[in-house]
Image 1 (cartoon, rainbow, N blue to C red):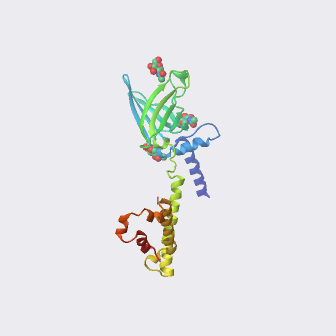
Image 2: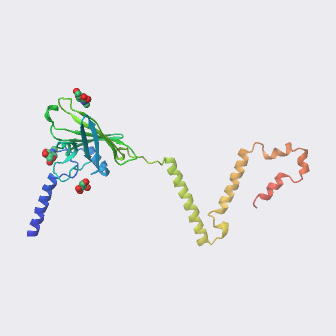
Image 3: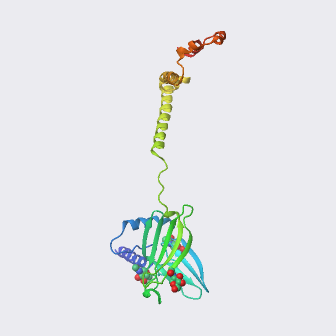
Length: 269
Ligand SMILES: *[C@@H]1O[C@H](CO)[C@@H](O)[C@H](O)[C@H]1NC(C)=O
Ligand SMILES: *[C@@H]1O[C@H](CO)[C@@H](O)[C@H](O)[C@H]1NC(C)=O
Ligand SMILES: *[C@@H]1O[C@H](CO)[C@@H](O)[C@H](O)[C@H]1NC(C)=O
């Protein structure tokens, strides 16, 4: 009884702790969840907890931006910061938090929004900062090329920091390279192989055939070969064989044996 109570307590406490220390992107937008957005969240899984940073100089000041995909930049604090700006000689500024994430996508890009950043001091009506990270398709890397494009804070509201990076997770799913034709070809090849091997085994072990006789339906295929040869002969030969004699010149007589007689030896009887 007491043990069960303890278990309940531990579960409740850890659930509370999870609430404070988010370990993943929280997709916000009210009670309803977007299935498309959740699918995108899944697509980002290979990038999760990967950390990127970029330094930029702006006049005298040097800024460093640290970005973690669906993870906290500083896992020791419960600030849920997913993108942080560090300026030499001043406190870090949270640009966006992972507990206020939005994800959208197109053919070969995914855009990640981290909202609920620290509030502006003077600009943008003192609203919360927000980060947008444009992830473009690049098959050659899981994640690279993180840079800042611009900071838009010249508006009255809806300001943002815009970043970009490359990743293969943003690439469209590859379609199968096999066309219907090649699949048919493979099926035919497999059937032929099964026919030959199965027939071979049958004739060898059940019928007890030896040598060339082990080939399945050997007589049929021999006759078939002859028929094909005859067909070819009929279709492809420009002069009918019977009329060959009509064109036979003096020289042919001197050759002695007639071609037709030579062919007759080859016919299997
Ligand atoms: C994410 O990375 C941090 C440190 O980089 C680590 O402490 C934390 O456990 C990781 N979280 C997950 C879910 O992998
Ligand atoms: C996100 O986390 C921060 C810090 O823990 C908190 O102040 C803020 O209210 C949270 N935002 C949302 C939308 O949950
Ligand atoms: C905002 O305005 C400043 C000066 O007025 C300018 O230097 C900066 O480029 C502007 N930023 C954008 C993103 O338009």
